[in-house]
Amino acid sequence: MTLTPTLDPSNLAAWQTLLAAIVGGVLTFGGAFAAKFWEHRQQRLALRAAFGAEIDALLKISEIRKHEALAENLLGSWKRGEDVVPTMFGSPPQSDPVFANNVDKIGLLGSDASEVVLFYTKLAAVRVHLRLMCEGGLRSMTLPQRIDFVEQAFSIWREAKPSAEELVARLTRKASGRGKPRTVSR
Image (cartoon, rainbow, N blue to C red; front, side):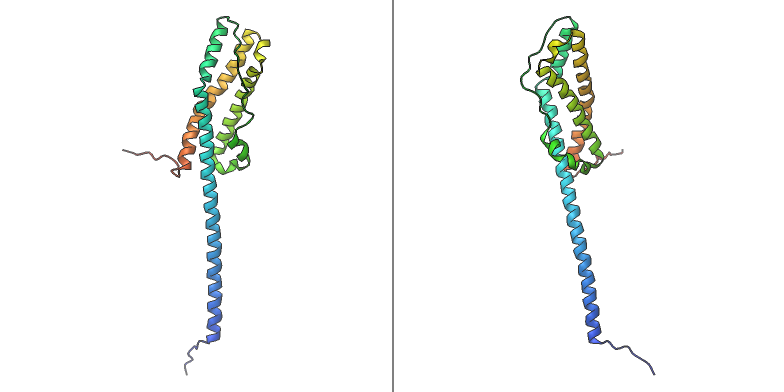
């Protein structure tokens, strides 16, 4: 005698319900994970775009205001023995809006985070020099002290600027979703 399995309709319904619950749970979890992943990705892209734009603007403002030429002219005058004290109006800002408002999210930049922090640290160091100049601090210095003081700031800026230009290009590229540049082999 052969036993043939019979499907109990009540048992089948229970298995269908269990399978539907498992599939529904997996889809819900997967959907929530995908949504969180997408949100995180969008935050990273937006943060890269914002930092890239702010650093680019700071570089362009420095170029428009001719800060490097001003420093070179001052150094040249002082080295020729001319007792020139620049008149500067206003004072550089304490911080920049994108950096100040997103410092807690800097880790989202991944491998670019350290370079962003390094740029803003160097910028803050240069601003210390500018602030002292704006407040008339050069008046109490001798010409050799002024030369040394401005050369320090100029040295920091010359080191920071090319790295910042590369950083802006990389942040902008990554923010547009293009990632690393591809090289074409011939």
